[in-house]
Length: 170
Image 1 (cartoon, one colour):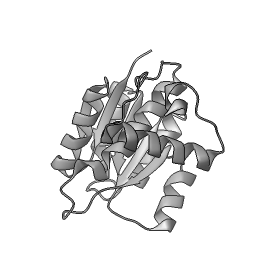
Image 2 (cartoon, rainbow, N blue to C red):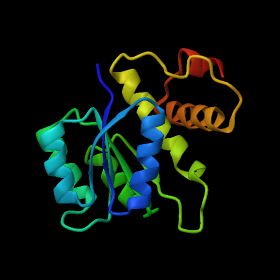
Image 3 (tube, rainbow, N blue to C red):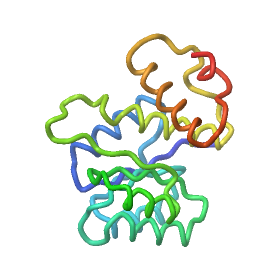
């Protein structure tokens, strides 16, 4: 089982933040794309285990790319990452097959902690779905572990699931 990620966003700084987070979590970043068309082509080429996908981009927007990726690859794990904080857009992305959705930090937000725990939680769920052991086998009380635990717990509450393993004990 592998941990291969495709990162798609037209903002280089967001791509870099996501890549750093993924690499620190033990994921291999197999590629990057800066628009929806390139994202679709990159997914076909690399067939990653998961991908991040911005919504507002040139060429194809993220929703269009999501629809096409899910049509060809129904099991694709796609984390929508967008600055758009509108319920209708969120629901549309989830209806069309997004695995999860997070809101990007605003330009005023200088801390990576605004978005990275949600990315980490998404990667953890992807690993769990592949049957990989939880990489946080002994969570400490640092800000990163606490934030990831909080996001995982919130997501599992939404899904009505209980968390098992090290994340449950936190």
